[in-house]
Amino acid sequence: GQNIDQPTEMTATEGAIVQINCTYQTSGFNGLFWYQQHAGEAPTFLSYNVLDGLEEKGRFSSFLSRSKGYSYLLLKELQMKDSASYLCAVSDSNYQLIWGAGTKLIIKP
Amino acid sequence: GAVVSQHPSWVICKSGTSVKIECRSLDFQATTMFWYRQFPKQSLMLMATSNEGSKATYEQGVEKDKFLINHASLTLSTLTVTSAHPEDSSFYICSARDPGGGETGELFFGEGSRLTVL
Image 1 (cartoon, chains in turn cyan, blue):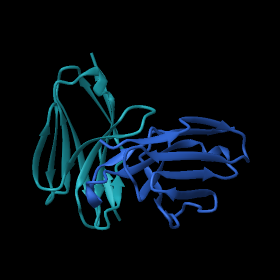
Image 2 (image 1 turned 180 degrees about the horizontal axis):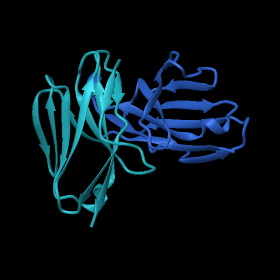
Image 3 (image 1 turned 90 degrees about the vertical axis):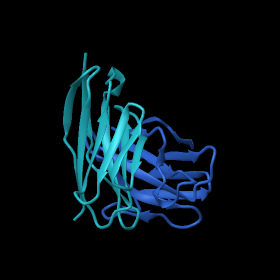
């Protein structure tokens, strides 16, 4: 079956760095997405990786290793507003999105 | 980026009634829209893919007679929860792909509709 694993919850300190991991097993691969979802709101797009390596976008970076079925989202200089759930989603061979359960990130002052 | 708008944001209804949720693409045409349901502390669950001018494609386990989807125009898809029951209470979210992104384009989500069935 298809499976996306990510930690349920993580806690970090304001100003610090946090890495949220995502491992996946899917039938085919057409890219991996990271979305941010604040409580009670719809998800918003953060990043898309289809090739191995690191994609940097401001304070957020996303890494992909296709051979390991692994990705991480790196958040630097954490701010209180970064408290949210972070969803990992993989596009499979049929371009269907398989969603992880999300990682709730709690930022403490 | 593209804008998707969803209405209503909140709806409370009595058990047995029907509720309609609208999803509009405001600045682009969407031949395909996706309807998701999200229970508290759970991931997004794709309910169905809405196709303009044809029948929606439902995911396994989703009752097509209960969750009616209509995609009458290139900018509007509607989800009607018929004879709603308390277990249908959830956060319903629609989305459409970046029109320039092809099959791997990012998804733009509506604001979501929180349904509470009493």
